[in-house]
Length: 271
Image (cartoon, helix red, strand yellow):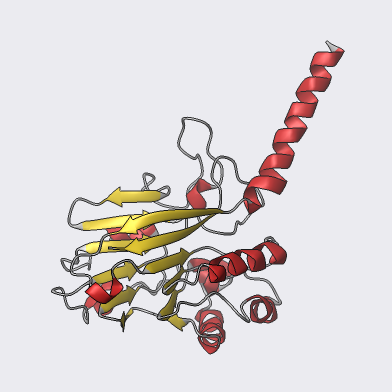
């Protein structure tokens, strides 16, 4: 019995160490095709990298984030998009963000970002924090989209502001999108795809927010998800109306624990 107890304790300790020290930093580079209707020939075969939920702050290792940035930069992506939650708010958030985002991964053609709920500070209720963070990020080459559209080599990219920050406005964001031309949407919270205002948009929506649930028991869905529609975990979803949703598992975490939900950077090949 003593041996069995010691073996069980050792196994439990090993699992605990793995979920705390290994998997939260065991980044997976996920490679996928991203077929975009009407994509200009100049962009076929080009790479678009999505980073999400980096959560720079007291709970995510700076060394891990900087190593992730170095790995992404080494891929020489053509386009880089950040889908929100750049930071987790703390008293030194702006100084901390300035250090870590001093030289973020950027695309050879363009770099875009949108805000997530944590970028709005405590209770997602401080637009002044979000605005100051936007200024910092734009100063290092990340063009932040707040319910607006930008274009790169004929591809329209619409960036939604955050749902929980009460700034999500798809009507305004999509008003400038030419439906006859190639487009994709960045929207931090996947619940936004169930809101009204998409006005017949057909194409991809790239999201984050869920962290994939961070902890997923074998053969079961993750028990904790910060979404209303609990089918939105991670990966690809056909929304049945011409839209397809991709949810990144994200780079960082809120609590340093992941089980069967490795952190992710997604490398899309445009097609």
